[in-house]
Amino acid sequence: MKKLTLEEIGKLAGVSRATVSRVVNGYRHIRPEVRERVEKVIAETGYQPNLIARSLASDRTNIIGLVIPNQATAVFTDPYFPRLIQGITQAASQNNLTLALFLFHSPEEEDITIDSIVNTSLVDGIIITADRKVDPIAQVLLKRRMPFVQLGRPEIRPKTIYFVDVDNVAGAFMATEHLISLGYQRIAVVASDQNTAGDDRLNGYYAALKDHQIPIDDRLVAFGDFTAMGAAQAMNQLLPFHPDAVFVSSDTMALGAVGAIRDAGLRVPDDVAVIGYDDLPPAVHNVPPLTTIRQPIYETGQLAVKMLMDVLDKKLTKPTHIILPNQLVIRHSCGAVQRGLLDNYVDENIVI
Image (cartoon, rainbow, N blue to C red; front, side, top):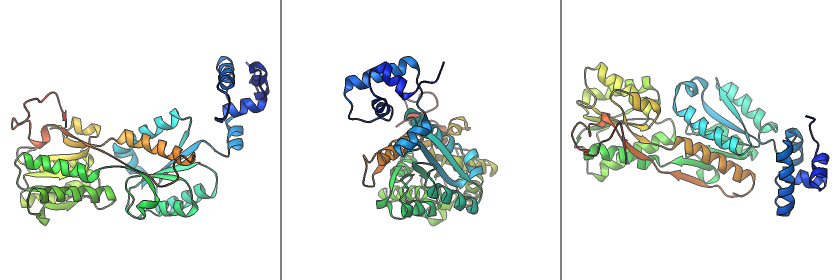
C-alpha cells in the first residue's frame, strides 16, 4: 500500500492539510467533530506520521534519556535496575516516547556523553538515578537548563530539582521496629553512605532505636557499598559483637550478609535474624525467604516519566517532589513465622 500524505488524509476527511497536521501533533484547539473525523480516517487507512517531520514541526524529538551514573556492569548485575527500567520503558511506550539508555564505563566516558547530550538535541529531557550524593551530571543539567527528573532525593539543591523517591526513613524505621517487636535486643545495621537513600535508611534505623529507648551501639553499625561482597565484609565486622538481628539497607546486600552469617557457622534466623530492603525477586528464592521492605520500584519509574512529560509540556513549572510509601513483607528470615507470632501466615509472604 502506498504511503499516504497529509494532503491525501485531508481529502479523505474533508479538511485541509494543516488541520490534519494539527490533529497528528496533538493541538488542542480543534473542534471535536473535526478531530474525530480525521482520527477515523487515520485509523481506517493505517496512516503512520513521519516522525522526523513531526519532530521538526514541534521542536521535539519525542526521545527521553535515562542516565544511570552507576558503572555499567552494576546495572546488569543488580536486579533493582531491570525492574526500574521496565517501569520507565512501559510508561515511555504508552506515551509514544522512545527511551535512550546512557551507561558509562568510566568517568571520562560519562563526561563525554553528558557533553554530547546537552550540546545537541538528542533528547527532549532526561531521567537520572541518584546513585551518588554529589552528582556532577545534575549540576550540568541545571546549569544548561536541560529538563530532567531525578530518581531519588538529591543531596545538593533539592528545592531546585524535580524528583521521585520512596520514604526511605519510614521504610527503615518500619524494618527496625519490626525486629524490636519480635524481641531482638542487639539489632545491627549494614548501611551505605554512597547516596541519600543509604543515609535516609540509616537515619530510619537510628530513629526506631531512639523511639524505643534502645541505646545506639556504634559497634553494631557497618557499611557496605550496595553489593553482596561489600555486605559480607560488613557483616563479618559485626559478628564478633554478637548481633541477634540485622537490618540491611538493600536486598542485594542482605543476601551477602546471609552468606557471611552462614560462613560463620550461624543460622538465619535462629542465630541472626535478617531484614532487607527492596523486595527484589531473589528475596523470595533465598533460603530462608527474605523478610524485606517492598519499595514500588516499577511505579517510581512510571511516575518519573509522567513528571518529565509534565515538565516538557509546561504543566509543571516549579520543582515538584513525589515521595512514595513502602510496605513490610514478612517472610522467614526475621523469625516471626518460626516464633508463631503470625497466626495468619499464608504462603511465602505477608504484606503489612
